[in-house]
Image (tube, rainbow, N blue to C red; front, side, top):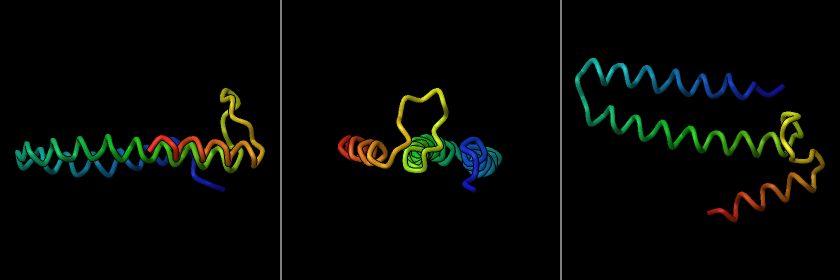
Length: 84
């Protein structure tokens, strides 16, 4: 059973929060800014990966319009990769 989306995002937040707090304690403003940018980038990438996982496994929430059949999942992945 895959981990829940919120649990994964909370883990990411905890990792970056710990590093950010250390940088803040050291009064390292540059590292704090770098960590903030890295966190936003990683969060976005992780959300995309979680969306792909949901599309492929069919575990999307009922509120989403994405279908759960494999063809729809492949089409979703193809659309996402075209965004690059």
